[in-house]
Image 1 (cartoon, helix red, strand yellow):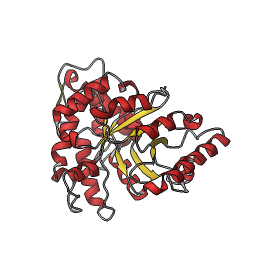
Image 2 (image 1 turned 90 degrees about the vertical axis):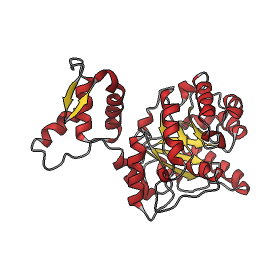
Image 3 (image 1 turned 180 degrees about the vertical axis):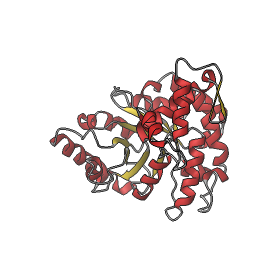
Image 4 (image 1 turned 90 degrees about the horizontal axis):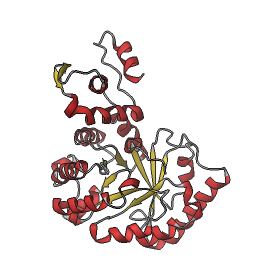
Amino acid sequence: MTRISPYALGATLYMPATRDDILDVVFGKKLTELRSLVVCLEDAVAPLDVDAALGNLREVLLRIESVGGRPESGPLLFVRPRDAQMAAQLNDWPLIRHVDGFVLPKLALSNLRHWEAAVGNPALALMPTLETAEVFNPMAMTELGQALKGSLEPRIVALRIGGNDLMGCLGLRRNPALTLYATPMGYVIPMLAGVMGALGFALTAPVFEQLATPDILEQELALDISHGLVGKTAIHPSQVTIIQNALRVSLDDVNSARQILNSSAAAVFKYNDAMCEPATHHKWATHIMERAKWHGVLPAPASIVDASIRLAEAVS
């Protein structure tokens, strides 16, 4: 299995498996800038519609098979099964080879073994979702992270933070005028970034379910990125470009990262009025260059006289 960079995810759009336009997105006829897509068989599908959703997914895979596979330029394609039992069923579909992997809902230490048994196909990448009450307990998250390191870690692209489910555990719903960081998620997200990040896992940010306040979405994205989150769930096509633009890297960060990664860099040096120390900033610099690879570099401010030269250097 080719390892998928977590930075390749970008804005991850969720689509119910009942939708009739999934193929248009898979083949790039819609949302050409989309980087990753999740076909959802869980919360987005009512119990009465599960059989129809499975049938629709099968038809999607048959259509992909009929044309020889997905286009290389299209988005990564994941499926979110309803539970481990459904995952085991999908795991054995021959046509599942046209899918990059599974999103595992409501993963916890108590059900990890069931998921391990269900997703035995080593060709499938995995994105477990952290969205149960145990997530509020840092000790439980440490235990889960260590268990994942001992089992599924080589196949995990990123851990997804299920913000709506976590708020639901507390009987709360987002205030549309505030970012999630002004709620109890302002404790959970930094805690997960620390606990799971220290274990080497990338994390993606919760969905922003308000469509009328893109300015708040932009504020939340800035906070997501400052906590090291590598992508964000989108629930509407209008959010995709906003998320993709937020993930682009500043020219100063790219140039700083390049100097830190330079094999001849001094042990400590100043760049752009900030101290750079390769021994401690190496991982940050590596992440910046990976983000720039997948999402590009922001245009230089007009005040920078040699902007075109610096930009060419940054992306070369």
